[in-house]
Length: 204
View 1 (tube, rainbow, N blue to C red):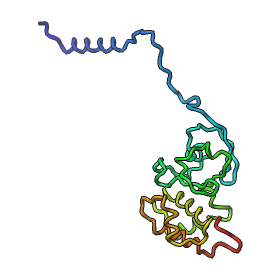
View 2: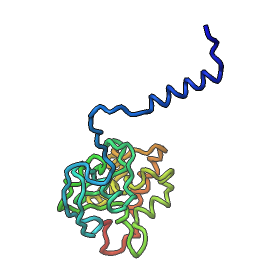
View 3: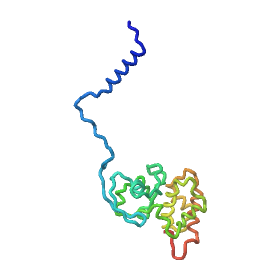
View 4: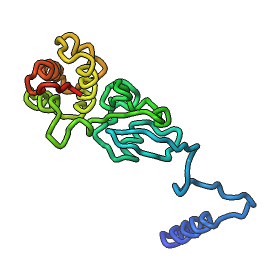
């Protein structure tokens, strides 16, 4: 038996690798891949009002309202937490009612009005809810805060002076992983009782 030298072994191995790398003509056509240069699904042109501004957008039908707000309108205050309608971080107001934007399709908002956390403050300053959240040290990591604010806003619009229990019930769908629930409740109750709302003003 001929002894195989290290040189012969390396030369033989290299030749085998090179042969394996040569493509074999089989007549099969290559599988097309999506290079991201075109639409990947049905699209719809829709119109909606976001924070009192009208927008006309062309979006994929599978695009959620949260993705529409963040990726198309760059309103990143709406957070995507669980992305399955459980944590409430993506809460926005649709025609005044709180919804989870991560589980609501953008096309369903066609012709409707949406309010996000970016719409709370005004040229005069922060919304009373935002000021109260700061004063009561409600936000900790802050990820859930925008959703908490929007749920609280919806409550105060229909009930300007809620009790602590009513606030707890309204914020039930908003999880705080920092467990700062008592401060959130206190901040909303204080906003309802606050004298900062001048004569003739309401929480909206």
